[in-house]
Image (tube, rainbow, N blue to C red; front, side, top):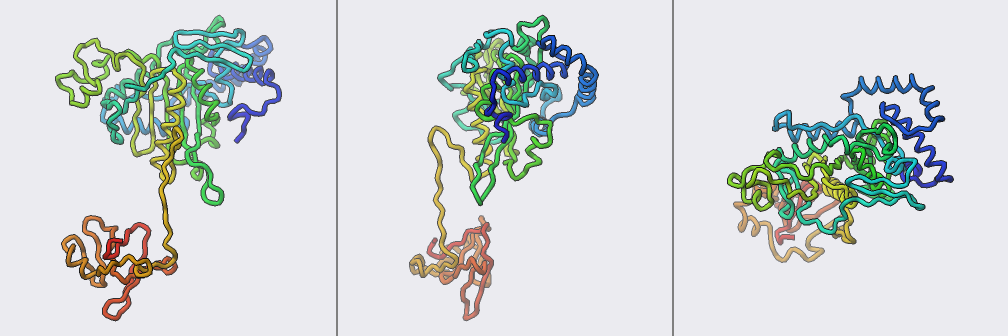
Length: 456
């Protein structure tokens, strides 16, 4: 990992670094055809680079429908999940964003370069000696009624609010069409012309730490999308999880690094403007047509002017066994951004297996045993006098008994019942016993469970 690019660690002169970041930001804004805050020296450089920037913008225009690989995976998931819905209700991710490909860009973008304060309806930011201080509008201390999960994927826990798929789709579509005021970058707030854009960030948080000599470190990929006014949230999350660079570069494509990718993809869309959306317009049913759970979760309306979730901030998630999770956060409270990445890490850990996300000091531990390279029931006093014949006599209607003297469970074919004198050998990879003076054996397979007549 390049600690300078990912976490901003190792710069010798912070002031010089900030100056270089500002010049880079102005270059990126110019490349997108957006207003910038460059000095006369910067303007002179941009004037020399005019044709190069024009060429870049033209290539970008020609590739208007081309997504970064990670974004293609997210969009494909949404297209598949929302395929039953009308085309008008299927949202599409933004493909023209100001990409934060270097740690510190989000922090510089959070304030105008010629001012030490910035404020809008959602946040107040201050430049301080240690860096920046951001005060979001909400400082949450409760999560009651916050977590909403869309139908159509994995089961929705009873303590979460279950949301119809059409409602999730319409909330996401509204999230991806913010008002113009919310797309204004704080960086150009004091300029004559302001830049309006989406901002995006790629994270690669660790899901499975490396185990020396056993397995490599594995991470998932997470994409953040935020309207320009919410860029401070991305400053916060990249300071915790690190900046994974430009998602367009092949070296940053998780799918080309299969040894270090869990195979799971996350997406977070910040959308403070979706608070207060109308329940009826979001496709929720009238209370007379709602199910008992919809009534319990408030996913219905009695009056046509009711606001979704009573206008209170929330976050809504869609996820399936395909391993993609998409979340809309209707708040700019920083804690939700951090916790959502942790939630997505837990999602990836659960699907990947052999991993468990640590949370609030807790962990799950599962014991494992080795019975040696060879195992015989008599040597461990587990036979308890039971025989294969008595097993068949008692449970024969549940078993398929084979001529060689073993049986298979009819309901669970990976459960194999073996004789009381069966001998297991991991070295030879088989299970052997004697029947009528003749040796019998079957393969020892890891997918199966083998049971002695005693039940061991």
